[in-house]
Image (cartoon, rainbow, N blue to C red):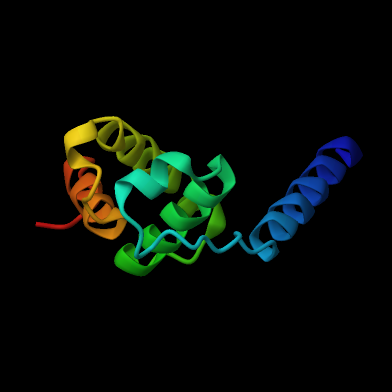
Amino acid sequence: MTRLLTLLVVSCLCAAASAATPLPMGDLHAAALRDWRQASDVNQFATASDLVERVLNLHDPIALRPKARQVQACINRVAANFQQGGQAVADTALACMAELGMLGR
């Protein structure tokens, strides 16, 4: 019983610490996909997190992170297409969120 209680307390503390740690802010919001391709993974993830948070009004980092990773991967897939290099990152993120079923009907 003590072991279970200890595990529960540690789990709660870890969740609280994770929720209290803000995600970094990216600077690719107004960038083109050609700039996205050259940016660091951290900057891409931070920008995707910012955009997902704003569009979905999602403020819980635990719920936000997997969605941001999905959007980042989608943007990376689109950015790999050379013909789309001038397309805006924010527009691509919205299209990706729609494609991934994150936007309501």
